Image: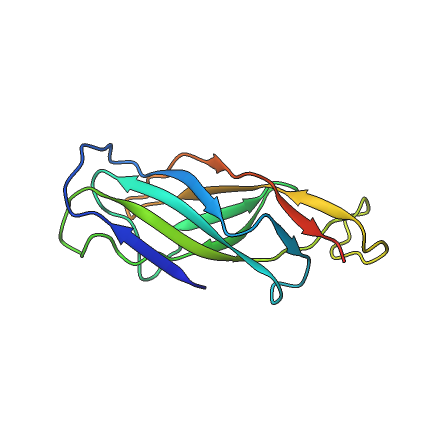
Length: 148
């Protein structure tokens, strides 16, 4: 996992619940595979009024594969701001999301019957802060999975 963060130091007036918005994908398509092949970088803007984002022990960012409604991947963010400092934070987080598989009509994953096929995958993403507050659930634009 690659995780990069940027946060500002001035204190904006924000609610205690975190919020996120989509910034970009590094590309719009992936080759299917068993999690070790292709990948895409996903950039998200975040904000949290009481600054209790991140944890050394628990995941904070969750990606749901909407095709089968399951948590596909989760990531830990470093604690923001430094522990003991209760001020608002906002910035951009970039995560490396590994590829997934196409799913055929029978529910089989990574089918190879027709390498010319593609499939859209749509991820839903959200953050959870240390108090357990969940951010808005954000539906990302579709990524194209090449079923080759």
